[in-house]
Image 1 (cartoon, rainbow, N blue to C red):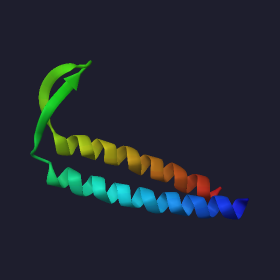
Image 2 (tube, one colour; image 1 turned 45 degrees about the vertical axis):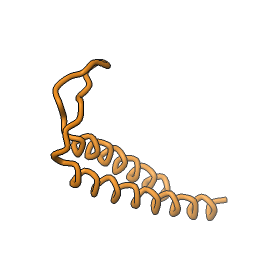
Image 3 (cartoon, rainbow, N blue to C red; image 1 turned 90 degrees about the horizontal axis):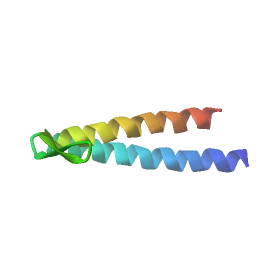
Image 4 (cartoon, rainbow, N blue to C red; image 1 turned 60 degrees about the vertical axis):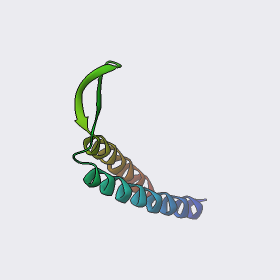
Length: 73
């Protein structure tokens, strides 16, 4: 079971690496693309789409770290 978990986590880490690379490229690609900002569900100041992608990237990096630590245990 431990070997299966290690192999499964390796697959997850590979997938997370690909997602992080895609988010990073989209963040740079759309760093000046405006989008409607949101504040409590209503329209707010415009924000760059790249910033939104960068925030998602930061979350994915944090998730990848958690998966990595779980694999090591």
